Length: 375
Image 1 (cartoon, rainbow, N blue to C red):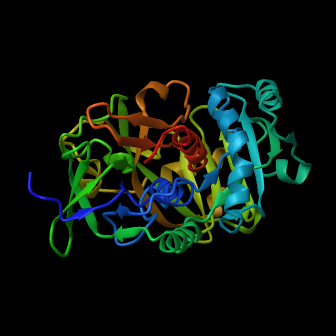
Image 2: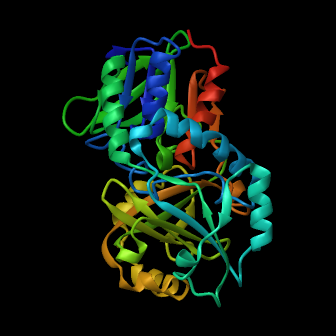
Image 3: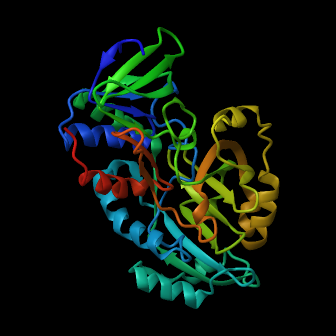
């Protein structure tokens, strides 16, 4: 192995919200002085951190996964406290239970909300009038928020600069290797410039869909992953739906959520949002698959089906669609749970792989790191 070009304490691979938050945590809470963050894109928080529903969960979405729901309830107030400027709270959030094909009834949903301590109350008649009563059993007013990823990106840039974290944008990591004297080495390839070999004690693989795409000595994750190419439709909604977030559940249904960074709403549908899926494996680069995919919108089908439940959506305008790779743990496909993936790789001491299905999962990751020793 050639001599490293650079030495540092930790390399963070991936400049999404998780990679950024871990870099800041290591600098501020654990005292690491030399940290390098590597990101393929031209800016931070531009992939999965941006191309999603922008929902800060409060547990309501997971009646079939109590653990996920409860952790969301615990984490939401912490997230609002830590990133108040990036959280949009000034909208009305509704959860509606379908009369047919729902995996929970209205009574079951109410009981579930009581069990996790989530606020819930029947919606007033004005809000109920938005829904087709023949298809909807009950409508509840809840507390749930959205986040602005662009404001989170601005926070990230300020904090990383203050912490002295070195940022390598438009740079990909190709290999993770065993170094000398218990060190690790990370091989980087910038879009412009010279390849670099960085020696470090710790590596945090926070590449989301790219977790298993490294060469060298990296063994891959032990946890099975499934990849999906998904479409989030960005809509300009009519006045009657402005200031609202709507979720109809629990089964083959949909969500309409504010998307603060564009001043629009995302429309997602369980049947039409996922376009393509496959089991993750080395050598099949999810981002290449996304680039090669035709990315033809299914928004007409989404709107047509959603319009049966909420007729006003038929007056919305499709502005754009966000296509992205979504990564989920195979073991949670049945219950829709969103636990974190947090793996230490025994073959590479000091190397971690991290994945969270929700933005508020970051606290679960940091709690795991709290018990580790960094020297």
